[in-house]
Length: 545
Image (tube, rainbow, N blue to C red):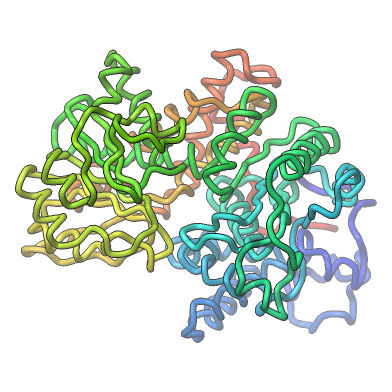
């Protein structure tokens, strides 16, 4: 995506353009041609030298939030260098720009605010959203939008939730090479019910209670319509909407525009991929498993639905497949006799006596796997994990809630309390754990394994819709890249250091489904991988003169 010469700003304006700025790496020729002579120190650094300086300074900081602020400042002034550092050191940097650190960054957003990134659209902007979106200077290809009501496991963060769309889109670029110029983070400020924020003098959002009902729906509708008009063909990813809005908005728009909800569908795909990897260690089939979820919201029902789809793809009757999946919510086991169940829980409400707590449910149902997505820290207790080992040789234990404070258990607890037998995945990063003379390496079941590749594939083929079949293809593509060596050390996902190659293969799988189903606007090329790779942004500097 090289700029035409007449589009490149000169002088100080170029130094203030994060998409093109190279700082002290501008060459002698570029300094003369682009009016930079005298505006920079005389020595020309390489990008490698700049990256080393960034890392040297970053590693001197002890506080993860301070590191987040430093990286955010780099992102604001030099995108290529920022993404070079992230791509080359993804294991170290991803936890700083996304989970778990981004949760704290959202909580402190107004206090660490330096400059705006993306767009803020509020309930006060009704009737003029198209006009506002037209203020964005670049042609957006993918939008991540939140209303800030359910940020990670932290609840209502209002406009402070902007940290999530910014972080997600950083991962689209770092993990899959989606060009940063086409990424647009947006927050829909509907107000907040968070009293702490309403009383915080540094809060950046509207000081009012949340809008609900018809006024809320009208703003979302105006936003979706305007986004598709101003940015034709744009992908809209809904992110961190509360349960009561997430499901119905997905159902409303999924067959109308190119959209998906990562909390429901991306989480589902990464979890199903982890389950498929665990089954390779167990030597069993998905249809042989019985899964018990702690949590019954977006993540739980999304994973459950895609697991059913995966079983159905292997010939299992969906009705029978659903009988193998159970949910526990804040009121206990989800059973048919309960009268308070929303639509998304009904397929998993089975005949069973009421059970009030998770440990009792484990003992009663004897699941082969437990999946935690309720954002209640420490709920996979020693008693729960001992109960899992009582009925399983290799229990599946997925503690997927994040940030780390919300994790159902740590990796060390999972392995120690199951005598090293747990097939473990986590929502936040944990260090390797020595167990019984070997070292087990837990890997994070992070959505960043899935959504960047899905977005890249959709962009590459010009997808008009993003379907459940595409997410199942993404899950299978991810699982297929877990090697026997990974499995031997207890890793259910490939190393993050391979993430761009992983994302490329997922993109190919997604594009393949789009072409097979007639959902691709671009002509099919002879080589899908070549198509995908030509779309991938390279953060190394290119000549501007």
